[in-house]
Amino acid sequence: MKHGGSFRSGCIALALFGAFAAMSWYQGFEPGIRSAENLVSFTRSMAGLLPPAFLLVGLFNSWVKRETVESNLGKDSGARGYFWAIVLAGTMVGGIFVALPLCLVLQRKGASLGVLFTFLNAAAICRVPMTIFEASFLGISFTIMRFAVSIPLVILVARLMASWLGEDFRVRDGSGA
Image 1 (cartoon, rainbow, N blue to C red):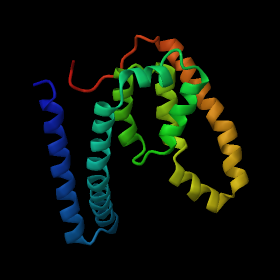
Image 2: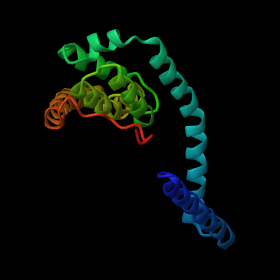
Image 3: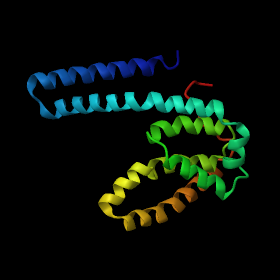
Image 4: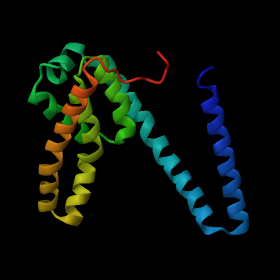
């Protein structure tokens, strides 16, 4: 019952946007038409991306043992944990949309909070497709410099956040539990 209000609000917002899009089309209001086209395009791309990504997150949850996550990403993993968090985040598709559910799975399997924050931040800045795109337009030296600056900062901020929140901090799954 607790989430019924937010669902209802979302439906109302979607209905209002639909009415705005219809009026924009009727009136020939170009920004409104482009907004509706962008929403449809985004919805199509997410509908193609999220189901397979969530399937892979589910398989990861089922197939990867807790001991494996604890030894490679847990409290005692040290620098190896941060390295694997960056590698895992860099090879993901879907960015933060996929990183958040995977972060929940990793935390339940024993990953440390600092490694989780590193993973989330790296999912936003270290993805391979984004890096290739960046290097092709801005040059490989720029990309190397950005990584040389951003990765240590990501790790530093993640460690500071983990120490501030404490290792008993838990990512909530939205179920209210």
